[in-house]
Amino acid sequence: MEYRDFVKLIDALKQRPKETEWLEFKEKFHSKEEIGERISAISNSACLCNMPFGYIVFGIHNDTHEVVGTDLYGKRKMVGNEELESWLSTRLSPRIDFEIIDEFDYEDKGHVCIFKIPATINRPVTFLHEAYIRVNSTTRKLKDFPHKEAKIWKGNSTDISNVILLKGLSSQELLSFLSVESYFDMMHLPLPQDQKGILDRFLSEHLITEDEIGYGITQLGALLFAKDFNHFDNLKRKAVRVIVYKGTGKIETIREQVFNKGYAICFEEMLAWINSQLPANEEIGQALRRDVRLFPSIAIRELTANMLIHQDLSERGFPMIEIYTDRIEISNPGLPLISIERFIDEYQSRNESLADIMRRLGICEEKGSGMDKAVFSIELYQLPPLRFQIQENRTVVTLFSYRKFADLDKSERVTACYQHACLKYVSNDKMTNQSLRARLGIDDKNYPMASRIIKDTLEAKLIKDENPDVATRRYMPYWA
Image: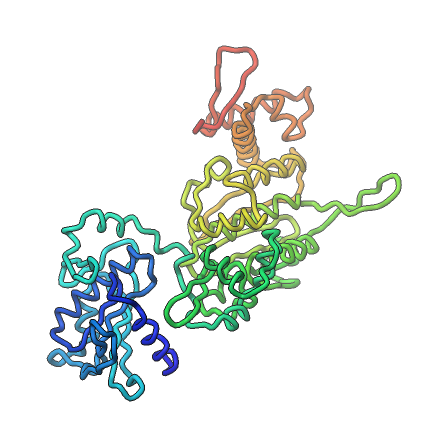
């Protein structure tokens, strides 16, 4: 921390009318155990108060908030042969990353030592196996307040809207990192006339935060609106990579493009670039020629949006789109939260705050309907079924280029039948032999061929017969 930020932090904390659940002023060091209990209490209380950090400040009078100085230098303090910082860390569970700031004096008024304590995430912090909490300005045992403990366990502090990537920024610095114009354009809102209006809106969306030393940019804000991911160490590997290969293997790369801007800023640009790399057939109409893409653009759009929303941001690796001559593979780091067989009908997002704002920005569909649209467009183009796979801690969706029905193997026919049954069911309808023939381009006279595929899918236990006793058989997915 620079000296100007140190003074700014002290001034902001002094202005508080009194101590709070996440702030305590002390004049003198009493015991190492007391500090350990306070760290536990303030971390737990900061979580309940939705504050990213809490503070213990040595060298400030509790009543007047005047700087009186302290002889405590927390980084140098020893407990026997062990540093105080290390002694405390090993007795806290979980080991939160608290910070001791004691390298400065406050102007000419004396030395100040600050313990900056992060809010706990989804579990209480204990010291020597006991959890503490602040009640007003008093430290108490957490077990005496079960409703507060329950709130900590239920907390959602791991949400990316609560993860701060850059902090201590001025308003001008913050606006230099984020494209605020893109947000207001995509939300169809007028751009506020002053910075306060912009910042208030971004604060309400949890794209940024504000604390005692300035503004911060959340992971949510950076992922969507960063002008350059390279300004954020934790996001450099979250830029989308698009790779075009020669042929059907990875041996030779034709070109590669990395989109280093926030997803909201570059989404349309990225889709346009992807579509420009795809093969097309020339369709000749009565008055003009036009190129018809071999892959439906709606499927690419929805699957790309899903790739971004459902990625595991704690895993290393890029969201990636790989284009081959016969297929497109769209993949993201992390394993899915639901079975790959339920992608069409179920929805469970790992990053709900990201999904919510991307829906409101018009980037993706409402919950679950995006995958329905992707499968519908695949059927409309009579392409092979989507393939969902888990590969080395990545989730992969593959779109295949057109192949005749005769060229589909048994497993692909069964998968197509299952996906068709799912799509029909979520559309409040049921699959029949006739609807499956239309899906696969099978002539009506060849209905026994469709019957065979249905039989194979029944044997695979992926579909079930709605009512075997009626003449017109209708089928549902196994989970219906």
